[in-house]
Image 1 (cartoon, helix red, strand yellow):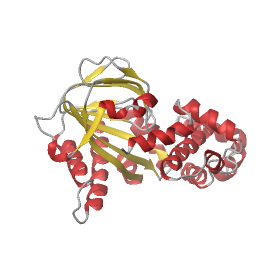
Image 2 (spheres, one colour):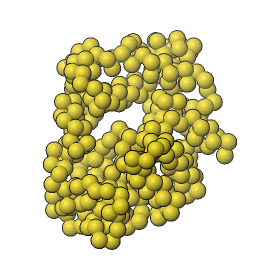
Image 3 (cartoon, one colour):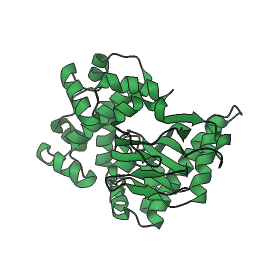
Image 4 (cartoon, helix red, strand yellow):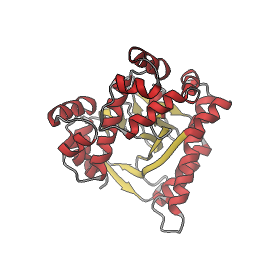
Amino acid sequence: MEDYNKVIESLGVKYKKAKNIKILQPVTITNYYDVDNTIIILNKGELRFGKDEELVKEGQILFIPGGRMTPITYGTDCQVTLSNDDFITRREEFFKSFHYSEVDDTVSENISYIHFEAKVFDSVNFFNSLDIPPFVIDKSDRITQIMRTILKESVSELAGGERVVKINTDYLVVEVVRYIIKNRLFVEQLATNSTYFKDPRLIDIFAYIKENLSGDLSNKVLANVANVSEDYVGQYFKMLTGINPQDYIEYQRMEMAVNLLRTTKKSIREIGKEVGYKDTAYFCRRFKMMFGIPAGKMRRRESLMNI
């Protein structure tokens, strides 16, 4: 249990956004994806996910780790299938946000969702690092109440609302981890992640990568940071994290690129350079390969997501 506490204590948790959504008409998204973690509670109706179209029942909660792509169907008797990009463009045909107080039996099929970040030492996307698929959380009064509090306070005009949201997002992450442990879901992966906290050299690498995404992050440089040989650093990193360092670096660069697209008006060229790509065309190719859409469309998507 001490290792699990270290895991939880090391996490930097950030609330991103939360909404209640009426499903105006059923839709299947073939490749739902977000860099942030997504937690959805099905208030009324039907929700399916994954290649096997696993059913989420009313009152159950679907957790999708950040960076994991999955098919997802909102609503009953769906006849419309779209890519994630096309769905975002046509979002208003299928989704309509509504106020927390309207969540009751009189509302048609609806869900509530929260996006949040949870990173180890503000560097590693924790749930993504477990390499776990999306999963269903059985009805949990505790998690449901926390989600309701976040949804309500996120639109509250009362003093301290942002603080309440922050505290409850921390609680939410703790409860998800506790659920994983209690139900022995992915416990082996969770235990393996405790290696992050046993080797300070790995923490030094994470910190260096985070602070130098625009610079040289070759294995030779990382080897000097960790004080190991260049030939060994890739093996060492993969042994502890399950991913080779250059793949991890690219994921971090692309995650930062998405954040810059969301929060700044910098050009695609400027963003590519800021995250370590001198060749804009190459950056655009790699971005589209990872996310399935061009960087410019990602920016448009984010503006539409906030409507």
